[in-house]
Length: 214
Image (tube, rainbow, N blue to C red; front, side, top):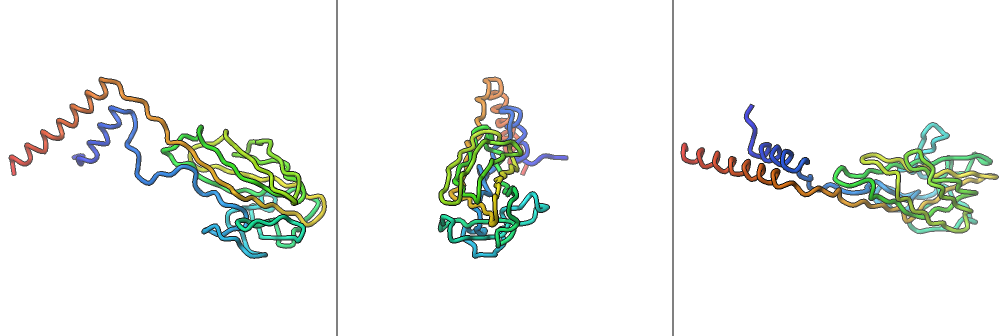
């Protein structure tokens, strides 16, 4: 099978640099959403389904927007629970969201930060199943968190664990964001550069022969 010029160039890059050229449009950390918002980040109304968070203890069902007059409020997020009434109470619920780290980015440089408010206590945040030690004291304030290790390339899971001591229960996550640096590419050795140059010259020579034949 005859390779196209584009495929030949890609092959030469792999031989010379040890990697394929980066694909345009690759992104770092994507898919992070505050609780209680739609796909555009707009705050949902009471009783709406949050498509970005699931309840692990309820078979992975979607979380529901809830609220209470005592809760501190934010314009860019809403409280969620297993039901809009904040039931069941006196229990622990874990809310999972997922996000991605692009293939062109280094997961070891990634971070995720935000703030959370909980009814009653936020007992931990888990990244890919590993506890980060972050906690939240109550629903009267937001507590900031920063996670800077434990990421993987591709799909990642972020779990917020909340212990309720008497219904209703609730979780609000706001200002959720993340980022990662582009993967560092090693500088090619002189021999690799020579190989690349030879290959490119070969492509040019082949093109010139085709023109002369035409």
